[in-house]
Image 1 (tube, rainbow, N blue to C red):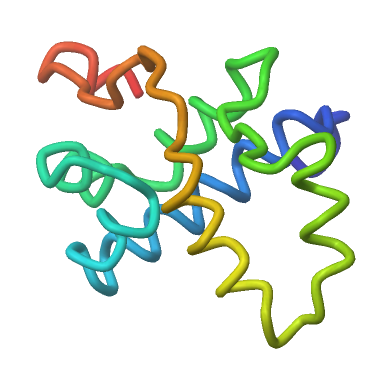
Image 2: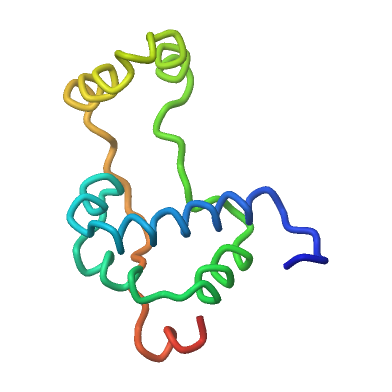
Length: 116
């Protein structure tokens, strides 16, 4: 990866996946809460090595990370004093629960796991 051009999207994906893996290894229960994972998904992520994470990140042309704040919500968050941002986020989530949308599962079958 040192001599090749890596897209911004690939860097974002890799950074996210590495942070996710670290969180899952450090504290699976907290990671499931923070990243909205199912315990089974967290177990799969915990097993992935760097090569698998890198392959996944470099193999996608779109971000696997979705902004939870856009438009007015993002402007409101930026204007909120730093000490109150977590409170703002919590209240926002209680008032406006996130829209459930189907997402591809991070589960990897045994046959596919070897290829990652």
